Image (cartoon, rainbow, N blue to C red; front, side):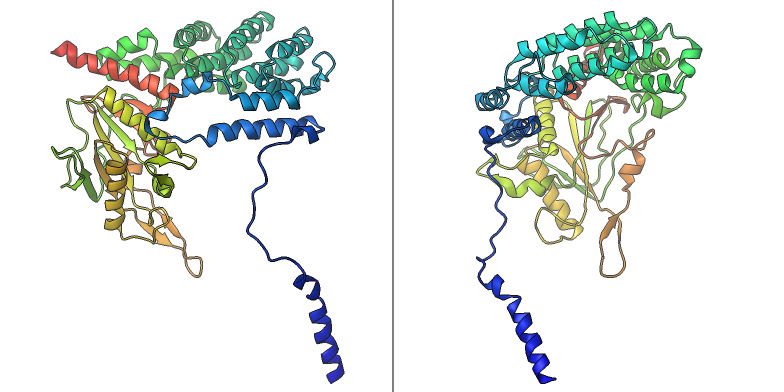
Length: 478
């Protein structure tokens, strides 16, 4: 028996002898991100490498304060010479006159990166004659999508394809025609061509005004119309600006007319027409701060009504996890991949500089931790949040921090499950709450909401147009 025990022990040790000869385990080393195109044999390898290089060039660029640019400029900025060179090498073997057309759209994306736009047109010319019926319409839409998502965006080609598509679509393809127009209106606005976007929006409304009840009863058509409305309502043609100059209520009525024109009936709920024109609730909380004093220092203050009557107000719902990037700040530069809230705060600060009379309100809440620090008590976390947003990010504002209620899961798990805050509930002014992270709600001098959304390229354009319309009321009254 003793013999068997010894034998088992020796066998057990023998199993580990090879391991003793292995080198010590090292931490995971990220693979080299510089692709060796000479070793790539397949199209998928090329496209993956090009995308990796392109994304790396965009994501890893340091971002801080005045180095941030509008998204519209980003869409128009060429890729780096390095990315273009590697794309050219990787796709050098592609002959657009013979390449299988089933891969046309994937190849076109890479060729545009390689600045081979003429080759893309030649390849697509082989497809163009076949785009005459429903079965091949997808080819056309995907072709359009390739040019819209190119860097820089190929607006001349987008317009050319758009016009060609309208000519080639059968007369009864109303829904496809509307969707095509809406897509091009959207990308036109994103790239800064608001004149074209508004021109196409008028075409859409002139078509939807003539649609029959039978057409609208079709579920597919109705869903398409519901997707078109947000695109058109985001644009600010002169009619929209003029209505907002009169009052926010008049602007809400204008949007209701847009809804009726597209959908065929009056909006019967707030969610269908958005929260614009509704009364904004006063944000609330447990901890209050301001840096609006003469010395500019962040101080704790008593609770106040944050939305000021007679002023334009901007309510920013600050992202709770935004400050997790705090540790990346080195010597005044942000060296990590910047989160959305960094960009949004910069845009908000830029908005303040453009319109210094705006009353800026920050609404945030506790969620139990700050960056990599140990869990904090609510008061400590609120103080840190105020220092982060008002001091570190240099926002001139009043801030309220809500102490979030929560429960802990039983047993070993013990995770924190946060409850909805009173602000989240109060700002449910339709089918969803406006109190979502990185959202900006603009409130006019009468306490009515006239803008809701982020301040990205489209958002900034809309916010500027709407702010100037609202502020013109005060100038006219004076």
